[in-house]
Image 1 (tube, helix red, strand yellow):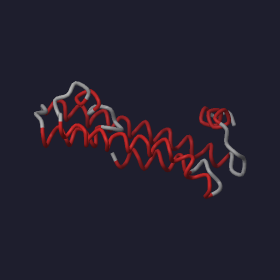
Image 2 (cartoon, one colour; image 1 turned 180 degrees about the vertical axis):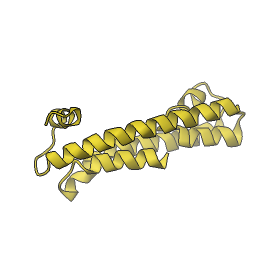
Image 3 (tube, helix red, strand yellow; image 1 turned 90 degrees about the vertical axis):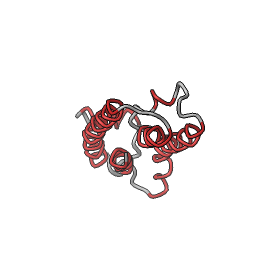
Length: 126
């Protein structure tokens, strides 16, 4: 879970050239982290709720919710293996994306990055 978050924060951080812009770029990832943490706190009281099992397989929430399910509820080894496999695949995808975004950030250094400019640079057309 940390590797996924670290890669996404690094990719987002490569897009900013001023320290004042970091908070704006980091906010969406911070909201995802808080969502997983709050979801885990709620799931502690009801680990068998219908929303806990599917969200425990989602890469941004699995580091939080799968641990709750392991401690409080009953989880099969297959579910744990599936959550780990999905998380590893998401880390590989985030690594690929972070490399592309970092390259785009270097190419766009000094300019205020717009979504269109970043997407174009990630696709390889700066």
